[in-house]
Image (cartoon, rainbow, N blue to C red; front, side, top):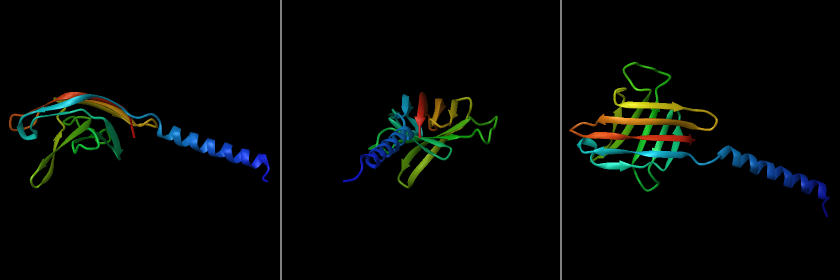
Length: 147
């Protein structure tokens, strides 16, 4: 029969490994707000993000797993410009020939902030923009803990 000391050491090592796994994932992201589109090229819809993911310098807001609607927030702080917002907002529109991104970059209609760190990305985006063909996109979303 094995000695209790090696078994206790193994149990302690496994407990420590499980604790570090749990702490690396952390709590789920917090997301609040909505964006709405009225008419025009993008059509009529409301977007209530439920989760998010991070890819390089982008935060992808996702409504739910069943929805194809996603909004990408692209950090432009490494390439600042007085003519563009700090965060580009990409809204995808499905067309018969594929997906087309409508990109909002005008600082007059996009107010945004985006910060990354060990706890994930956090930020805020507010839109009050025309979307072509008489359409309008309006709303505000805040988020934290996106990984």
